[in-house]
Length: 495
Image (cartoon, rainbow, N blue to C red; front, side, top):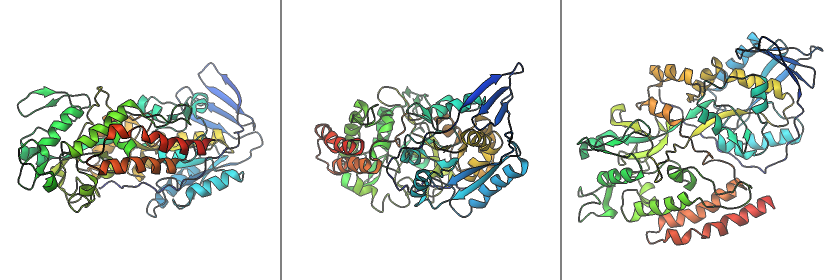
């Protein structure tokens, strides 16, 4: 099965102030390890020591309907809707959290979802659960998500089945906005035939392992080694590489490395380490030093060493159909599991594989992560019930089912082996590389919030795109110019 690729087009809206959540209560712990939480509405929740959760109805017997809002990511395609409804039907039939709690889903067109969600919240009618959604979607409502940390503690929710780094990935600005759910990890995809033709050993599939060349010599698998391989794998129409006299960069027909599918600067630069263009105060521009180094390195790779294609080549028929790797004219790309199928094009399974992301210049390994979660608006009417439903949805039984619906690698370690062993999920690459990549996420995410999100992205592009298209650009000299572009945007958004 070819994994389904999706990235919903997010229509950005103004960041808003959500109403304060009405929750709270008293916790008591019994001698048998059960924790009883009494919420302000009189509902009592009992959590057993083994992490199982049972919820009794409030004394009034009042029913609680938990609304699940779908549209901020995957879930709106027609084939997926009945699969999600089946999950809702199972919840309502089995009543795993008590007779009084029911689940209802609301599917909103992805283009309209941010506006609809904002309108619901502003009108005092927020949903209880929103998802699945990625980091970029969550950033649309930055500051408006419930902190799940107290609910994880009061419900004794077991996190031991998740990679701790993946849990931290969803702790944004000190707020645990979600739990790990589904992952689309990043790997180094490579054309094995190109390596064979050049007599090169394949890159390592274990993170942190050295590159072992065809003669058995070891060297660190880092961006320097990536460059060495990239130059050998880049070929012009006469069969010459950038290492050969007479190489013609204008007649290149094969490139050693083609960056990523989404070539926004922040995503590219994470290979040198995670970072952010906004300081911790959320209003001051900063330019991470390692990203400055990346900007120069990347430009040199295009116009001095010639092993990365310039934008004109990337947009040409040589590389654009359906992607640089899928065209058969690029040897390596760093991209995500959703790439398989559409991105690999007509390449047979034995013509490509995946390897670990190389370390940056300082030895740090960063495999940027695309992932989904389910959030709870801060003003959700039923926060504790909402958390318990999310906990059930992402639990050991339902979590892998939901992840499979969206074509994601389940976040739960206990579910991954059966997922990757399923012939239906054979995608031609080595799944263990993706599993291991979850230990090296970019924190903060390359998709994380920054002031005036879309305007800031456009501002960054207005700086980077001319530089990366100009072979004579002095990138180091242009670095100070970015502050003059982004800081006024921040000021207008936060002032």
